[in-house]
Length: 250
Image (cartoon, rainbow, N blue to C red; front, side):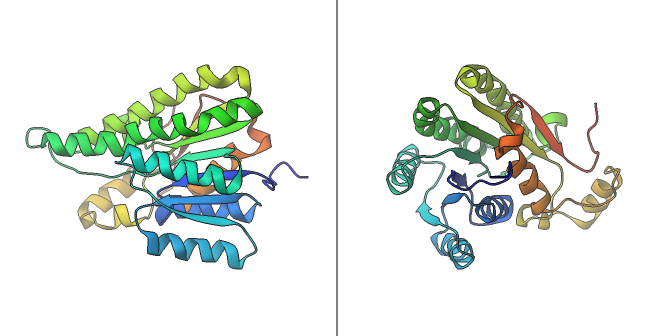
């Protein structure tokens, strides 16, 4: 069995219906993991599942809104019932509600913190028991370069992603003795539906700030996640893996 071979592993991916989550789900499945696909859009999840199944993989569709603690509980429970365990958790689901802080509504602050940070903690809480028991687990949180350097108009998003990095390190310390690693992947600007809506002049300015001179792809982020989920990454924990074209160094 090669180190990259995830055969026999079960992954739970949030926000799996599109973007980075979808790319992660497809790649983990390609490497042999059974994948529990969680997101709000059942139709899109079904498409991802059929893509995985038609390639010979195993996938389960779990409609779940990360804003609902109840739905997080029932989706993780359904995944454990169907697959018997969860070895890999990818906390990817995230939202933005951009606004200058002077004008930001409390509801926009709360929505982003709940979806991007609180939901990750709730997902971990639901899956960690079995991971600790079997003394093997991989928790991978999708952070952002914005959580490392900030961004005007994204105080809520930056705070949630910086919080996710702090959560990653705290959990890494809590679970290390049981061989459960906890890491974050911090993408820079990636071509997804989320970045599509940016104004052309902002896109231009962003490109100038990226040494590699281009946006990243969802697949490039997924490869970083796949590496951290593998046997080869067993001595890496509490780490933030930057996938940002050189935007942030040091």
